[in-house]
Image (cartoon, rainbow over all chains, first blue to last red; front, side, top):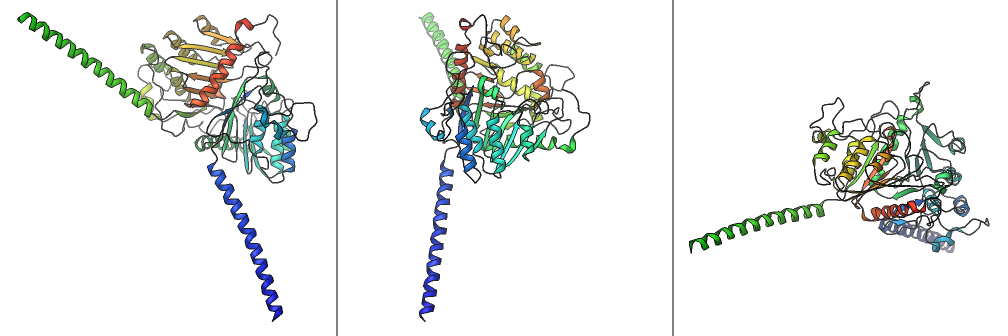
Length: 263
Length: 263
């Protein structure tokens, strides 16, 4: 009789514990959903050249983060467009873009290198890329920046589905990240045609579009006058995703020819 | 007595006529204002390569239009993003983008050349540029397309304030429109710095932003995979206009040096 009672009591305790666990999980999930639903869509413009800052902390946080998308996208900034202030007036075209230094501390915990650890246009671009949780489509004319290369590599290692479309002439240039990404097992397709694959856009989780004039090269990031728009907008994302899928199919290796037309 | 009456009658008739004229003008103006206020902001994405179409009709209409901005911007398409369908699957990268043929008739009245007279991504871009009424800021890495060059020239002739910022290395290339525009009296400024002025954006009447990956060259328009966003959005326009003014001041000829840094 006592034994039966203890058994019932034990079972009840376990059930209540489990129920509380599940309830806690559900409440947390609902809260996250609600927050996501009520978060204003991201809209930001980044101008380059970017100040040269250390981005180790961001990449390390992503590496240690475990699950994909551990690095949160930069804080949403309401319906207003946010902007990295342009280069400081001075040497033409070589100024550095920095954002509010208040946010700098977030990304400067571990690395002791002499570079500044504040935010920059590059660090914000990196954060947006690293915020991918399930998929990342890259449609890039040139891709040689090592920090962005490492970010994409990390996402792939953490289970994000990465697909890359690029230009055949520029993918073999010195310092290109394309070979490295291919070696890591990321799917890459390229053109064989007469024109350049000159797009410079990325789509994060089929929700966020990153597009502009910037090729993902260190030369462009640190020296050129460039712009990048970050837009969370269903219609824009849909149109660019359709363009990506069109190109992805057209550049399918089964369509490659042995004697392609020269550019 | 009769004479006085006739005079009064005449004066009254003239006054009534004038009042009716003014009333008609006012009603028309109010209607236009209302339509403008209620028109959804333009949002469109153009993908390239563009089909090669004849754009003579557009440029002729602008030339004959008299007052600046006679060419209306392409019809607004509601809050939805409009898109020129991408290149037809086929020879990689050399397909042609065309828009709804329904709109083709509008632009095919006069020219008898053998080119198709329908709409294309280029013709839509041209229409957006030609819709300028008061100002046009161009911030272009490379500008060699003759149709777009003629459009900008025409706008300048019709009193639109045109300002151009470009890259010093690319403005002297074969077929560049920069020299032609300078000769016509348009203000042009360029960099002297180590990096490229790699932006590819235009601002129409300080209200519409045209930006993307496309350099305004015939090679890019007809052969490359490119995108151009057309956005009527106060915040985006403000940010890009600020960037333009920053560059405009920095590239002021009084800041030029005799021995610029090489790229």
